[in-house]
Image (cartoon, rainbow, N blue to C red):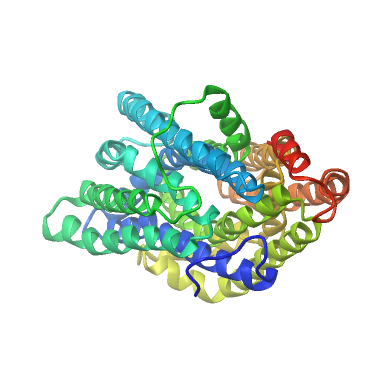
Length: 469
């Protein structure tokens, strides 16, 4: 794989593959942070199932914390890519510097806030008297490493946006590989149990963070990291553009909280913890579908934004179609593999027969709308890449609203386990609406503001970049 990619001139199919595949694999490997922890925890003698349920309660809190890295990372990278496409490297460097400051501020503030409220969060989010101690052990240690998680996650996207997807992948691979090595050592050899899994994750994220910072200081990057003056107006623009992906992931955590709460409430004392254990495994499996798909859109976002800034309508359209086909093909592949992989996947977490039989069925139900998920994911992230923040936000909120409605209504109308049907329900309906909006409004925007390359001056291009940002 080539070390550098020319976002404005390389043939589009090969360019998208070179950017999407490493980023997709990086996101897939990044999933191992949580999945590997859960695998080892589920096999702790005597307490595995309860400990797994406790860590499952922590999952939405971790997702919520991680979403703040997307608020800055996915808010800043389209802006930076547009500036690079317009040839303004100085402005691109200022965007990266201000994003770094925002991530540092969020890391400090969120660490303090979540540490003070961690006990209340766990009780509110579905912990029972039996699972609370394990959840508390895990989340207390994880919150201590919030800065590492935010910086490594948020800064990594700026490597990808500058065509260095290989380095972006290296950051994630390094952290995930170290986590896999440290987990059994801390959990079993050192006898730290659940807290050992959290320590392994925090230390791994610390190493990944250091590597990302080192890579962003490479002098031959188009926009290397440097310490520049804070620009409040630019920070507001970054946060505004990042609002849609942030809400997408933040509301995911809220929905998972409500899912756990609904399962605990409607399942009752007899089934509540069992259903949450199943949900923890189901959510681990869905990460294998959702996160690589997110990697595809994240890796290709810079291509769309760069060529938008350069005013090349033909390349923007090629990139959009390419991203859609990659997402759809991956979702179809995962859907076909589910029937074969699901039972084996569940056995990695638990050998309990009841949990195995239930969870395999829930995975099949949960992933039934995977093809529609690909359409929805592509539309939302490409709206963001095009600077169409309001459309991205609307489509994201629509999907979350539908998911929330299913979680609240289906258990009341049927049974507690019917909450799992909320996922395919929202995938199908939201994808139809998002696709309709995308097909109707994106061509209009490209025709009006992005004529064929070379048909307008650099000043006109910069005016469009400012307007779209």
